[in-house]
Image 1 (cartoon, rainbow, N blue to C red):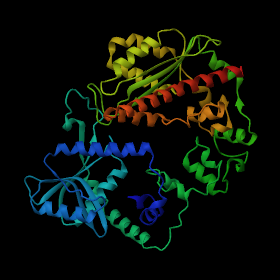
Image 2: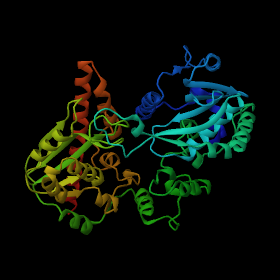
Image 3: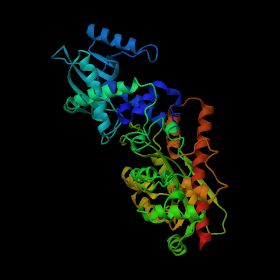
Image 4: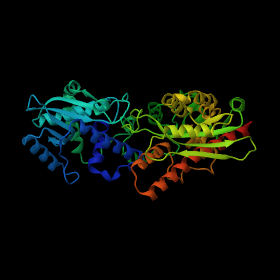
Amino acid sequence: MRGLQCAKSLYLYKNSIQLRDAVSSEQKAIFNRGNNVGLLAQKLFPGGVDASPQKRYDYTAAVEKTKQLIESGTEVIYEATFQHEQVLAILDILVKKKDSPDQWLAYEVKSSTKISHTYLLDASLQYWVITNSGILIEDISLILINNQYIKNGDLKLTELFNITSVKKEALANQALVNEKIHLSKQVLTQQKVPEISIGEQCFMPYTCDFKGTCWKNVPKNSVFEITGIQKVEQFNLYNAGYKTIDQIPEINDLDKNANIHIQTFKTGKAKVDVPAIKSFLEKTVYPLSFMDFETFMPAIPIYNNTKPYQHIPFQYSIHYKKNKEAALQHFSFLAEQGPDPRKLFLENLLLHTKNEGSILVYDSLMERNVLNGLKNDFPEFSSQIDMLLKRLVDLMLPFQDRSYYHPAMKNSYSIKNLLPALVPDLSYSNLKISSGSIAMTSFEHLITETDMFKIIEIRDELLEYCKMDTLAMVKVFEILEKQV
C-alpha cells in the first residue's frame, strides 16, 4: 500500500526506517481510535481466538498460529495472519462459513464512515494474499461505522456498524495487485534510493511520513507556503523554477488572494483596507463577548442521544468587554470527565452570555454547528439559542477576504497564523495544548485517566489553551479598531 503511493517511501521504510518523521499526538490518537473500533467490531463475531504473536513483529509465529487455528477447526479468528510470496496480510476478522466448512468470510474493520478507494485496494491486497495462501474466501467485506446510528442505552453493534461486501471490487483489482507487488519487489532489490522528485504523491492519499527527508532542501518562504492555491499549482510553480515567493513574476495566473500574499511578502508591508475594516466593525455592538468552544468527537458514541463522530462541546472561554475602555472579564467552563457535558455546558453558556451586545467568534462554522446541535438536543432552550445565534459575528471575515493581510500570515487566516503576525508577544508555542485537535484528544484521554494529579494537570492545560484563544481574539480585534 505504501508502494502504491510512492516507491521511494517504500524503499526508505524498508531500508532507512530511522529517517521516518515522528508520529504526532494527533496521528497517535487516530491509530488508537482505529484499534478501539477494531476491538469493538470483534464482538460482532464473539468467541474468536486472537492470532497475534506474543512478541511484537514476530509475524512468522502469527502465520503459523493462524494455520494451526484453521486446521484445529477454530471458527472465528481475530488478526488472522497470512503470507504469500513475501507479502504479509493481517486480516481483522476471519469467520468460517456455517453451511460450508471449507469456505471463509473475511472482514476488515475501518473507523471511517465511508468506503474509500484506498480501503478497496487494501481489501484487494488482503484477498490476494489470503486466497493465494490456499484459503477459500466466499466473501470479503468492510466493516465501517454507521454515522446515522443514535445511541439509546447499551450499544447495539449490529446498528452501529455497517458491513459491505467488496468482493466484486477485490476480484477486479487482482491483476493490478499482482502487478504492483512485482514492481514493489523490484524497487526493494535496488541498491540505492529511487530518484523520485517531490510531488502531489507526498500528500495522497496520506501525508507521507518521510516528507521531512524528501523536503529538506525546499527553501524557506517557498511557493508551498502560498496555501490558498491547489497543490498542483504549487508544484507547477516549483517545477518551473520558481522555488521561493519572491521569484514569482508580477504577471501570473494565480488568483487575487495569492497575489496579495506575494505582493505583501515582497514589500514587507501589510495590506489594510480601512473602509472594509470600518464596515466590519460597524456590525459589532458593545458590550462585546469573545467566545470559543472546544469539542470532541468520539467514534463510538458515549452518551445517549448522540451519533458517531458528533461534536460534543465540553469547554468554552469567554472574554467580556463592556466598552472600549473597560477592563477585560473572563468566564469559562470545563466539563467534568464522565457524565454527558452538553446540558451543563449550555446552561452555563446561557448564564455567561445573558448580556446584550455582539458575540465574536473566529470561524463561526464550529460555534453555529454546536449551537444548532444543542438546539436539536434540548428544544426547551431553542429561543435562547436562537438569540445567541443572531448575536454571532465572525472575526475571521476581514482576514479571510484580505481586508487586513500581513505577510507573516503566510496566506493563512487561521488564528494560529494570525496571532504571531499581529501580536508577536502572544504565542501558543509555550502551551502544552496548542491546538483544537490536541485539546480534543486530551479531553478524551481524561475520560479514562485515573491519576488525580494527571487529571488536574490536563484540566489546567485545557483551561489555559481555550483562554488563549479568546484572548487572542481580543487583541486581534483591538488591532482592527486601531486601523480606523
